[in-house]
Length: 121
Image (cartoon, rainbow, N blue to C red):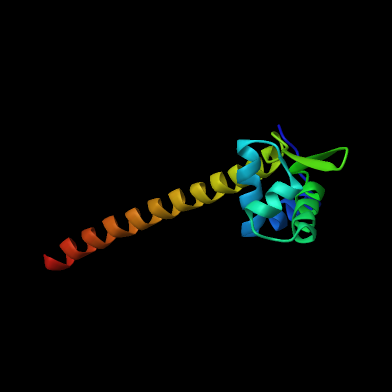
């Protein structure tokens, strides 16, 4: 079972809250890419892209590696396992609650019909 911490979730979901960073993750899902190439792709300054990459790296969603003057970004393949487990746990919880609510609504609906038939007599 994957464990997760509140700080890790905060960092991950904070990083994912930005459209540019989600776009960077999408690009890195295709291939490892340099920060310079990412900056060009997203039409932003190198400094701006470095900030986005830093947020993603601190959240553990990507890793970077420097070779000479080029810093290459790579998607951390197992990065979102804890987040996915957290989401799934809450999805199951809400699904169970909605199923219970459906049962209550159905019982009330049947009772309403029975009461209506009884009142017609």
